[in-house]
Image (cartoon, rainbow, N blue to C red; front, side, top):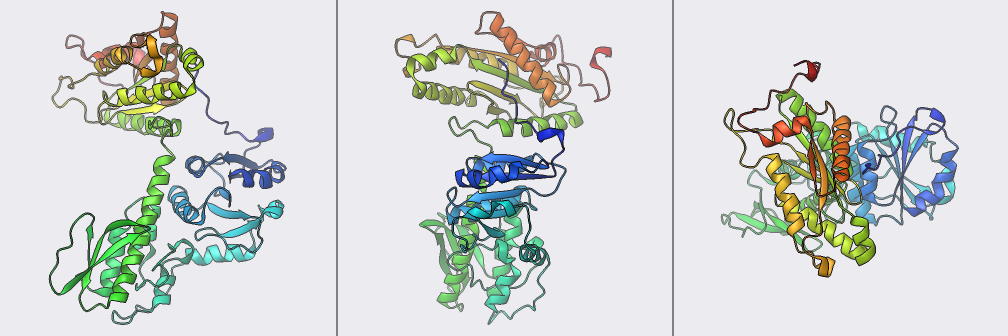
Length: 478
């Protein structure tokens, strides 16, 4: 039951990479992979989808080197998707470089991308054109413009103040009646940082249109004073809410502001969806392996500071391959999906269910608050949750198993607890995996607890779990 190893982060020939290049889509791989293989200092990452590319940006192979370069083929994303992707990419790695690969040499890049790379010019990929570098330098400098008057704002100057390379495109975006604002207060920066752009948008709109401006989210019915008017904020058929502005603002200008706000809200929603997809298993809806490693690392760091335990359950479905072979992959997919749903209905809100392999899952039992009273046990201990799930999966009627259901689907797993059974994420996963293998050898349909997990997970009153030792203390000496 060996877990699938994460991709190697060592470059070819044992040399440390100086740059990570992510190729997104089949066209980018065909055009760029061979030329880039000649560069021993380049770490190549291939991404079939935009979500995979975002995952590569979270932990670029050349982590200590320069900013990663992402090449997106125009077969991988539409123009609108490319805009959302650029925002999501820079929310993950603000200094990453984005190049748009196209068969047409003169095709303009989507907003947020630095330039277009002709498919036949892949050999020049690592050369940064002077114009491109200059545009990046200019984009990083605050624009110095005079604040236009509220009555007749200078539309072009205002749009320039909003950092053109990342400005949202579409109805109303280019004609925004805004004023100059520091970049750290701009809606674009908020989106890149993973925050809602709405507060920054409203600040700018109030400066331009009046202090009475406010936003009513859908499905709120707009109710306002006679001195105000409500304009729908919608884009591509999706209504976000209503923009309330003073009655003396003419209809065209109010609609223009509402369209601009809708563009920001739509792009923020797309960026959040991409961010979520980068961490979610598409089939089951569980968190994926990428999320598993990141969350486990942060949970253990917090547990080390707060001196609380973190328990990891690793399990797989016994003889899953035989079910796949007998009933087909569609039935196997349904079994995996229903398994996740059963487990998600049993765990606590702070726990995480992750799919880390084909039929291999991991559950991070993390309760940062701990028992509410000293010496008391939580409503459901980890052992109770794990054993209840084991019973439910065995008793559940899976229609896909036909005459064999219920009673034939079982799981085998192992539970290890930080800091007793292991002192870091890698060793905790390794220990839980070894315990799961032991369960297999004991006849399957079995859960094996590590010594620390046995104490902590069952929370026996007569054997209270000891306080976790500090990081530099050997638990065997305590």
